[in-house]
Length: 442
Ligand code: CAO
Image 1: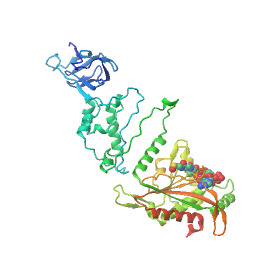
Image 2: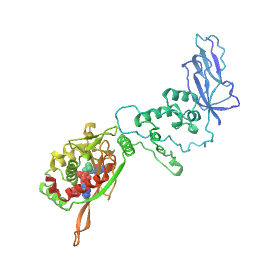
Image 3: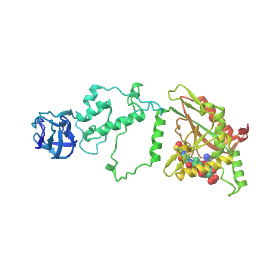
């Protein structure tokens, strides 16, 4: 069968326009009006549609070429049922370019769409609300017609999608990315529906303009932890309560225990296991700290078990294995388990189940240093304790200053569940228990 030459139709004043996308290739079966290529001039993005149905036999242009009206695009074998090989006249489909000319260098900072605000950290599997399309804004969005059509089919408001193409043109992949993000985090408009302006995006920066750079991928753990922390930071109204516990006596007891058992007598007992026991006693006294907020925010789910997550620093990033039933275990058992799980964490041997079911987390940087830090709540838990390095401090005893070993504590909590007064009660009790560990027996 004779092949038909498909040429660029009359595209008005546009001459010598760049082909920015080739949407078909040799062998493709196409329908009349299917988009063949996308052209981009200073003023507009144009899509050239197929004049008839058929099979593409040979491409005559490729991406980056420049074309004008009449330029040969491809050779088409018309479909058998096409009545005449005479091409039907087709108009290019045009989308306006952004009104303000964008700088042409590839170093242009790209302003991505504000990341969608998670409606809540449900994980419940319920579909996020689909944002209504703002039609005027949709029309103004800078995207070729095929991408507009694709966005309409998916119900995506193009005005909410950031373009990664040249001059911030929205591509099909941008629309797909937007849908993925919306499914993962919730509606992009949920923030504005609640009156918030959304999250201002960070501009993309080309650091190489100031000197030599090197880009390395984040580890899988870094990426996952980053997602969780971001989600928790956005969802949870955090407050951090600071305190300091006098652990002078506790430390003397701990050292005596370690000296008694000798270097080969069992795992070393660190301050952390005392803190785990004291935290558990606080959770028993203030059960709200051992609860979770239901996903609709209307109920508290109280746990009657005491599983504590411990943040462990590994070469690949932070992981939080969970030590179960801390209320039923001795200091020695906890020390042994702590040694086992932190070893497993560093050897990448933790199973997902080892990191699930926690009620409350402890992040101890005491072995490293620092005076204070504000940890991020590990949802669906409602509180986390940050422990820093103990230091000897002069403490007034009513008559004189005494050297006392003081342990800095920082309790971050979800203010939707815990009031400030309860936060202060928790750290006060915790300091009392660590200050006199005999109270743990009461
Ligand atoms: N003050 C002073 N010294 C402390 C201390 C504290 N609060 N906590 C621990 N130490 C001492 C220990 O006694 C030990 O000293 P010795 O060897 O002289 O006995 C030394 O510091 C090292 O302790 P460790 O860190 O090995 O053990 P640990 O039980 O305190 O902690 C673990 C275990 C797994 C929690 C820890 O190794 C770790 O990974 N910490 C980092 C957690 C993290 O990255 N948190 C940040 C998360 S972001 O919120």
